[in-house]
Length: 310
Ligand SMILES: [Zn+2]
Image (cartoon, rainbow, N blue to C red; front, side):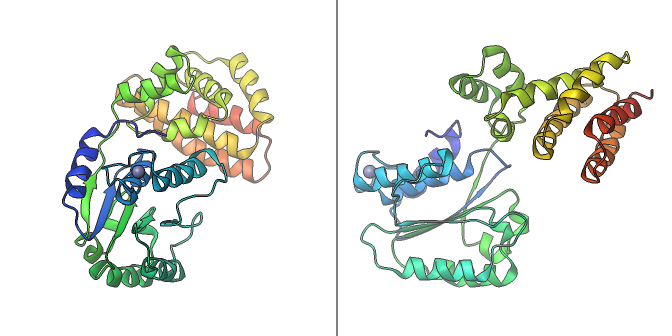
């Protein structure tokens, strides 16, 4: 799996790698879904590559094992992967705990001829204890180790950790890169154009709909009705029937997309800002109502009529 875009970021990382330092600590900062983890894995591949090429030769045993890991992460395979890489992440809604960092410390102490790489995803999730424990290792890392921390906001990390790292800021992906990626992933040119226009420089939206394109279509239909100056009663009743058959996760995905579309239109002046604010409030009510067991059909109709002032 190749990294999309980020040529500048790769160039900076290459320069660091060419210094052949005994150990590295990187901090990758950028918005969700922009490709930080994938580039971290590619950087790890290069660091561990037997031929010592920038992002890996792709042929040596180490590179092949790293590619297995990439495949496990992104396509859910279960292949034997590079034992010299450790991925650390928080469980949904939870902190990264000190026990996880202790595992990391033990891991980097293990002898390995090729080196060790630790990738800590959403490093801002480390609680203070965990952060402090990591700091000690970052200050005196064993030889041939690489740490890559990723975050959406470096200000949420301990400043002492940030100052130990080479910082790589991830720029938003250009629309054209996203467009090309989507067409390669089997989206039609029309879909790819629409989705790249509202993707806001990341692949978050793509990850939401990649397994279920139908959700994108439904979201678009809801957005069209919201944007229409006329009341479209028949339209909303049809959509409410469709929504009624979906589960809460699917509905949440749909509304994330609807919100992105409406937000974009509001910024362009094509959707009334008050209507947009009402939409946000009404969506909150909608979610609560659905969770409380109100029929989705009724809840969506309620949301629509309240936003459209009907
Ligand atoms: Zn290699």
